[in-house]
Image (tube, rainbow, N blue to C red; front, side, top):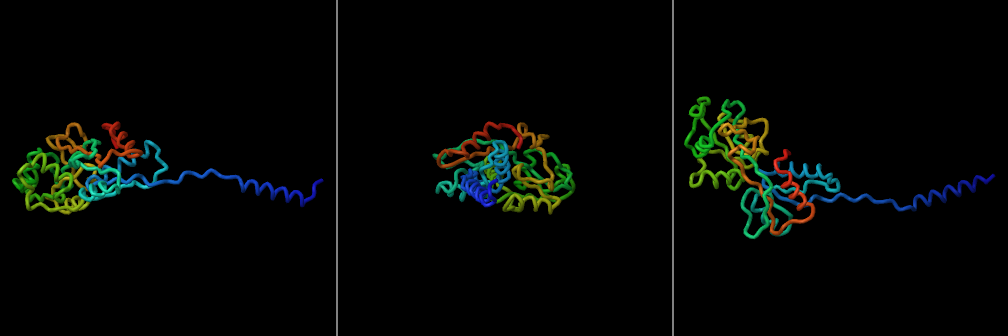
Length: 255
């Protein structure tokens, strides 16, 4: 029969061997590549990054890698190679790589207590240029209309100015919302308010209008759509390139 000391010594030797066996180190998570977007397209971009990560099971990445900046700052950061891609609906600088990623409806929203839920595009334009200033003229209550618009340079405002208003200007009586959240807050506070935002930025606390009977949730029929682009000084590679291809292949998939 072996002595107790020998058994203990053998156990210690085995334990030492186990401890010395190298263990596989799991890969460390790395930040998702840096992408910039404007405040109005933050929700649009965030949803699609998360959907991509879920569909591809991209578990080795942490964070969204998303910076929210005014467009001039985002373009400057991309030029300096501080980030990989800029998401915007505006034309890219000359010589830049750019690719279409989808279309975002420009939603027209009112206070939830306003019974009006459908207008024509011309009626909405009439409001925002100051031609119509009372809801009664549009089949609503006898109530002054208070337009609410984003700051100059915002995606929706720039798109409407470029494609629909032409030489006409937004009324000087419009309230300015420096962010989508501010636009929503101003509309919630005023029964006569009406504003414009990307569909992805609205909340259930405001009423959503259709245009000529077309619901913005039905993208194919809705008249006010702005194209969303991915742009960079040079074509991105790696996971960002894969994300762009996945977005384009997704087509009309709901996010």
